[in-house]
Image (tube, rainbow, N blue to C red; front, side):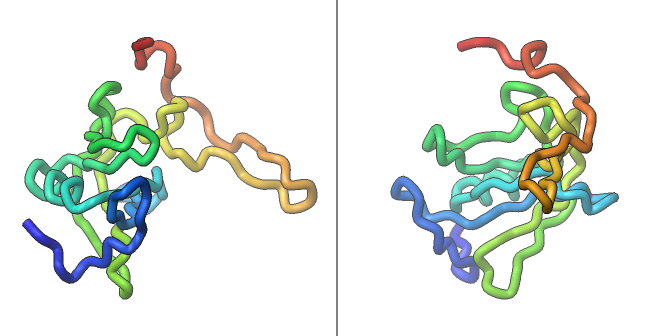
Length: 132
């Protein structure tokens, strides 16, 4: 399947990508930001589970493949430039590999730029991810 209307304008490691924002479908809380190539978007549409392109591992990635914390897609939206998507998802477990429900668990102090933790962990990563 081709997505001629979407603009995969970001070029990283030879891949043409769009920005993908995962958002809780009920609360609209932003859970994470990642990238998708055409294959990731097609797999997401075909399976109903969020797939992304890992720029660090340079490979297709099913969110939750090692943790079991899958993202069931409820809706996909695109912006006016068609170079980004929002995935409205039902999150199983947590979105963040650091153990938080959302990857946005810290706040930046405007006075000194220091990070302050504003959320609690929902799991301990060492109990979920095994050394490879």
